[in-house]
Length: 88
Image 1 (cartoon, one colour):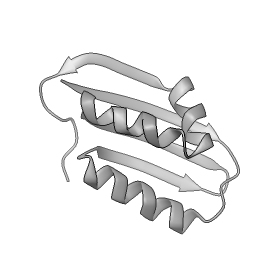
Image 2 (image 1 turned 120 degrees about the horizontal axis):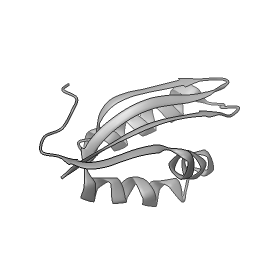
Image 3 (image 1 turned 180 degrees about the horizontal axis):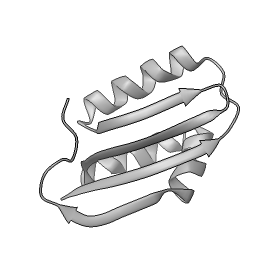
């Protein structure tokens, strides 16, 4: 089963290039697809991936405080997609 998460958070971000590279590498490793926009004033995105891979995202959020906030306030759709919603 696949999950889709839509999120945004107004938060002051620094080192955006490094953060973007880190998140991209994580998503590629976990086959999570979609779009995540980073800016100095916050983050916005919609991503989709296998439910079991999103557990890795929960573990990652323990290391990145604003991800923890995003996951708590996200619009998580859990209606069991049979395939991933985004392509490369």
